[in-house]
Amino acid sequence: MGDHKYEKSFQLEEAIVDGVDISGEWNKMYEPRELTEYDTTYLEKVIGLDGGESMGWCYQCAACIGVCPVDNVGSYGPRKIYRKLQTGLNLFEDKDLWLCTSCNNCLRVCPKEVDMMKIMPAVREQAVLEGNVPDELQEMLQNVAEYGNPMGESARKRVRWAKDMDETFRDLTKEDDPQPVDVLWYVSDYFSYHNRGNDAARAMVRVMNKLNIDFGTLGKEEKCDGDSQRLVGEKGLFEELAEHNDSLFQKYPHKELVVSDPHAYNAFKNFYPKVTGNEYNVKHYTQFLSGKVDELKALYTGEFNKKVTFHDPCYLGRHNGEYEAPRTLINSIPGIEFVEMYRNREQGYCCGGGGGGMWLDGFTADHTTERLSENRIKEAVEVGAEVLVVCCPYEVSRFEDAVKSTNNDENIMVLDIIEIIDSCMQGKVAA
Ligand code: SF4
Ligand code: SF4
Image (cartoon, rainbow, N blue to C red; front, top):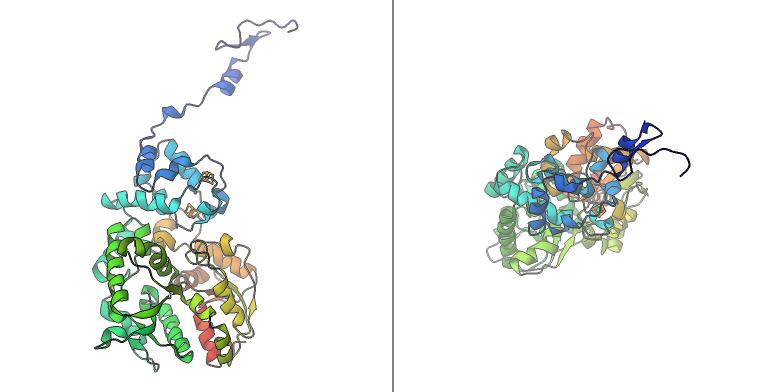
């Protein structure tokens, strides 16, 4: 040990070597960090919830942080939430409870299967019961409970989009003795009530008629599918909507149920059966039409000479594994030049509309640097696309707003796949 003079042993709190006090350094290095100093009441409360168990499995590897779309525009992700809970966060009353869009990207990479798609609804359900819900979300929930749609519009107006169309189709609820229909088309809220959704709904009718498909709708009896309401913790409302829509599916016999909305697809395929005990032969419209691609090709009389890219909806892609059907349709369109964005398929970025995000734009803006939809529009522009192609009714409105707010009006437009198919069937040529 040489000639050094130790005045105290290292085991003691002070250490002086050759007259120099180095005890501070040693104490800093070896002082244990006691997590027991923190209040873990809320961590335990989350883990104790039915659905919240997996929060306790996190071992802080951080694989989730790099893929979380919200962390990309702020500070978020399961690892951070777990750490905050460990150090005393009351998630039941915190902003972090409402920022998750349930995009499913963290679960995709998590080695411990920490499942935010179960944790968040479970915690949110408690917050809803206690009335701790952001105002804009509360309003949406009231609208759905009262009117059957998030916009708070009357059921009568649900069919208004079809009013001035030359095309005809079956509204099964208006038939005295409704006979079976081949395809029952669930139109969805945003196709029914949003002006840009209306464009896509009308395009869908024209395409289905050109294909000679016997299809019908549920008219003004159709109600919101409830999937987003389930994810924000309104389990009771979800169950009510499931019972209501299921009663219509049983009442109007059909061979296939085709939906415009990936959220409805997810609900009918994976969550309605748990409530109703019934299974549904359900397809997203891109899946239905991609099975008829040869017939579609024979009907195209125009070209779409534009460079396009495609945004994978979280609830069609990551949640339900469907990446090919939309691409098959896009690639069937004459003249189109298709380019992928950097983040595509299972690594696709989120538009911010899932898990209640659709009605939380103001709230989310206060806690992030930019909207997820804005981040995505910038990526689409960066790959040189003139059109961002979508196939989820939430997305046209979200991305069109983002085009404006990022000053990209001159650079890019947003279209649903069905709108492009329809215009090519009408002989329109885009230059
Ligand atoms: S990937 Fe899973 S285990 Fe790793 S930090 Fe995230 S939640 Fe925790
Ligand atoms: S589900 Fe998506 S938004 Fe939510 S924490 Fe996971 S990666 Fe982030």
